Image (cartoon, rainbow, N blue to C red; front, side):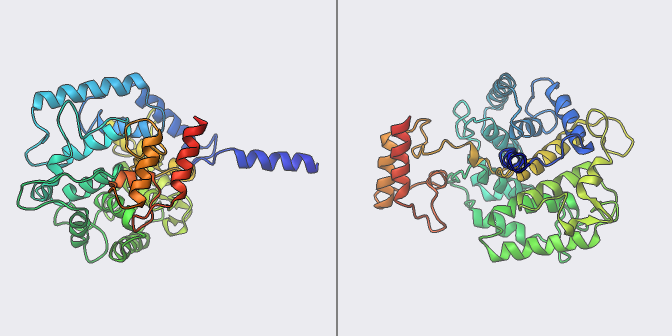
Length: 377
């Protein structure tokens, strides 16, 4: 009996924790939605049947290589036809969305057939043109792989500080965010929290703002798990599920977001169908609702599995590849030594790979670890 107990405990330690219990209703819906999205045509550039589909499947680790390559060919054709790195005169989110999708499939948005999709985001005036949506998604996109913001000749250079300061300034007195002049809505609040999440433990103003928003929505959450003061939608549930997951808060089990036994995930599932999600309860299949619900459930899965958040794609960086050339060799160890000696300056991605602390300092042990990796490979 003792041996059996030890064996079971060992298995428990080896088996990954998943967000949804095997055989549960949530798990069944997630699997059915996954199958539906995998059956979709090769994604095109667009907010429906495009980037969100790619991001969800890629971050779930199930996007087929041929689908990713087919999508990338469509992206190249689309940008060549545009003939510009700026994909829309007024909407910077067109660039941000594409940057996220390309990053998720391991492609470089800084060079898509010669076009740098990050360049338009360097113009803060352009980013602000879309209201709060612009800065929110620009910050999410730039932080997805710790991209350096290009320099611009425009009147106002974009910085990360300007982006999250702008978001903080737009917070409503009650605690949430909104797209227009109306009261706070969970869609925009969820997106704003997703953008601010990487700074939650680093910036006191960000922490206070996010805590205020969490407190507000915890207080108004209904008994069915819904967060909207008006009409719930799967999209609003999805944004808040993704936001909580980005903060390391389990949307299914955290007591602050469970009322009468119902969580936000329970509210989301009210919109589920046999093969995805409807925009209205009892309605027909909706592609946008399905894509957003799927990536939100994927975000929750990643949290439970101990993985990085949906939009923190630094897990895609190659370990010890400090010079970002796709291989690990002695030049990476040498670069680390030079950086420690302050003879070289590393960018944000390189600092992430090197495990630098909040002051940008790299431990000497990283050089040793890199050398050992090279010797063993």
